Amino acid sequence: MDPETLDLARLQFALTAGGHFLFVALTLGMALVVACLQTAATVTKKAPYHRMVRFWGQLYVINYAVGIITGLVMEFQFGLSWSGLTHYAGNVFGASLAVETIVAFFVESTFLGLWIFGWHRFNRWVHLTTIWIVALTACVSAYWILVSNGFLNNPVGHRTENGRLVLADAGALLANPSALLAFGHILGGALLTAGFFMAGVSAYHLFRRTPEGEFFVRSLRIGVFVSFPALWVTAAFGGVQLARLADLQPMKSAMFTQKTAEIADLQAEMVARFGPGDYVPSEVWTRGGALLMLLAFALMMYLSLAGVVLACFRKAVERFRLWHVVLMAAVPLPYLAMISGWVFREAGRQPWVVYGLLKTEDAVSGHSPATMLTSLIVFTVLFAALAVLNGRLLLRHARLGPVETGLGQDERAAAEPVPVPASASASASASAGSGGTAGPPPPFTPRY
Image 1 (tube, rainbow, N blue to C red):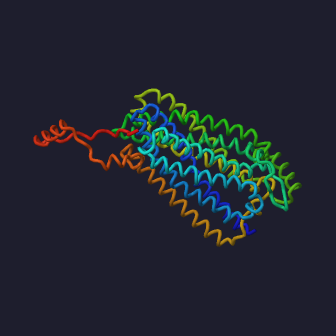
Image 2: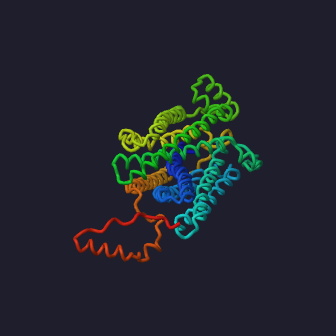
Image 3: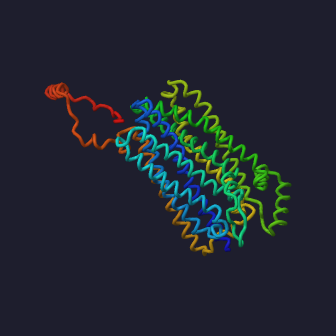
């Protein structure tokens, strides 16, 4: 295998997987937050909660719609660039990818469509059920992806037949600690991302003193009180993963802790078992990713602790402009932590694509460097365009605030003429005759 082709394939996968991960983090977290908001709206029947569902739900739908395109590209990439992996281990990890595709692209997308177009058409409890199915299937989808990824990091539940891996123990594969611990870590990180996003957007409107002060006071507090416990859940699962690392991937653990003598011993052991080669992962990417992740966590920890205290005081929430600026600037921190953590997880297992079984150089497809470079350019341009599009759409709708949007709008009510009471008609006529102006339109009231 041409080393240039291998490097280009690895770079392409890193960029596309990292780009897709940015969408997934917010989508997964916002799905759960919106479902909880709609539960409050359905139970209490209070209009402020309905408006919050529509506003934050609109941002969730934008991120989901753009992000699902990147997911399609990710699936396509396995066959394009990593045919050796699919040929050798596809019978094991391919099944979980197939289940994830069914869950994400059929069940989740179908019920999201029902939720989007079911406002004022379904009973309010039925409509609530649709968003909870969306949120739960998003979690299930993430779990199946991590089953595949967990197998690559800690291959269990397989046997070898004719030089290929086949599934031998489905229970071991599904209960793989590398998958379960990562799932808890990702779920906490997704809620952390959603909480920081909500707090940052709310802080923007409070900083600018927009008319929807009460709306964004509530939203900022929700964002702060979601992100605080989510941070500790994420840290707890991350800590357990680090503790298990010495058993599952000792070389990565030794690199992280900078045990030079242990690294040399492990390198010699690997050479004896698997033949000549460099079995030491890149220190820059492995240790650098871990340190960057921990730095981002420390910053978020201090911000979350301060945020929980400040959020208890309404005047601070409304008027503490320095805090508003900090919250806006902190929105990228969860993304930084999750991407750097993903780099640590993936780069640290090199040179293996299936740890201890299949090297990365043996998994890449036999394309020429020119073909792989062309693919890299196309994928990078596509993902960059999608990221810019998603960012612009999110910023645009976030800046607009909770205005009347298509999501949740009752087309039937809009199409029907609104009856005007006789007293109101007379009042309006008198106002017009005296040169006055009519009053503001009534606020949006949910129909269910």
